[in-house]
Length: 207
Image 1 (cartoon, rainbow, N blue to C red):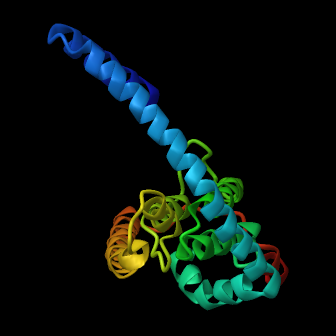
Image 2 (image 1 turned 180 degrees about the vertical axis):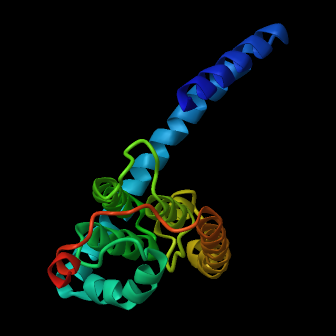
């Protein structure tokens, strides 16, 4: 669907430009935009490599694990239908920890793995479970302590104070995360109890 939307926008732009005799301007804008995109990507590589390297150091030093343990109680409250000893829980913690540090590129693989593990708990593979919806909402509107990617973009475009957005970004993401959690709780309340999931090994032994 997204590909069709982009194709429609491109075709509409070309047809509109041709009707108004501005094909030359559209062509120049397209090449200029492509050049800017490549320049921005190259400029981001060094910044993202640096932060991802710090992320690996933080992971090796145990900082990420400590951060994950700090947010674990909140994650258990947000995902009551996910067994604590299930692999999905660990991936969810890693995804949220990376998002907190503004490392979306590092958070995405963990989010995908978490979704794959949650799908294994899904009694209806064709319908997303409440836990999957919660993860998607939180991943989209996650609280960000350090907006690494935005800082890198601002530095790439020559901003004199690229880190000035930290406070505003933190406030905005707190609001967005709060709204996502409220919406998630509301829809969970309306939809009733979550569907029956596969019990964890601990629960099976205890039963």
